[in-house]
Length: 151
Image (cartoon, rainbow, N blue to C red; front, top):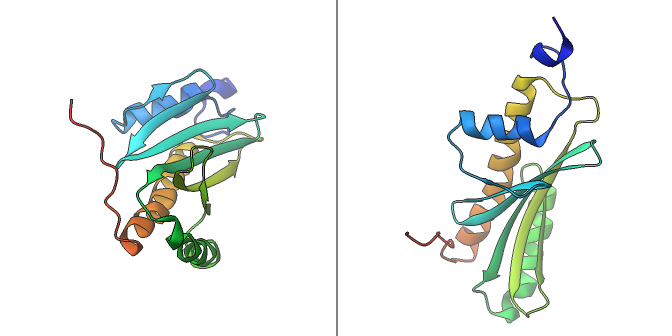
């Protein structure tokens, strides 16, 4: 059996394979050519492959309705989450428009490929762990999650 049909052997990780994982789990997304984008529980998620070596999962909460005087408290939250939270790295900042944002991201090393089972686990873990950070943020600072608009 050829390597590209044997799911028990690591295969190159591609956006097409990630799309298959998303489709198999009824997960909606947009393919933007170089990355996949979607919303999860109202937060923006970007998934991309960097230099054929890293699988990146990045969540961002834009335009956080938080007074800027609360930023020192958010910085303490970031330090605590990065030390004691689940996998991933959190950050809080102010964008070019002066709006507060919070993000959480994580990468998996994929230079040697991944089996279908590994890739599915990477997707599940990458999404759930980063989402946990943002859910903790909105709970701690009593902020309503930015739910998507009804169509």
